[in-house]
Length: 129
Image: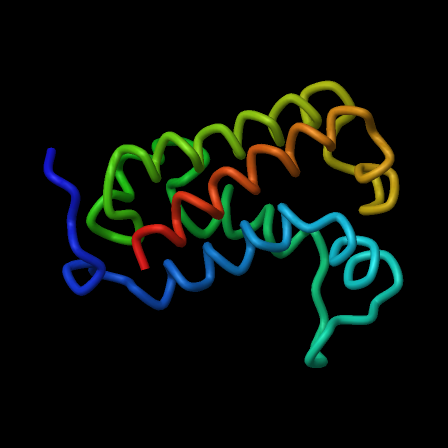
């Protein structure tokens, strides 16, 4: 499959939302500031739960990231990168469940893998912009 251009995406606004969530997952300082201390640069409110709902409930990214190519992703490299983020989150949720506080998730050793996968996904997503 050829890589699509951004203007060809069906839901470019959702792509921007995805990039924001991935950016949040890639930035440990932001996570502590926004999710734990409740102070979000620029105002507003954010928590890990918003990201989880977007990835797992609001889109098919958690089940089949490739199916989102043409909708909010432009190619396989993007779907693979997002799949790695999902996989790193799945490892934590499988091991610790889904009822921990944001602070408890961030304290887990495996959280470093989430940050690493998100940083890589962010680079790949932004390289298409």
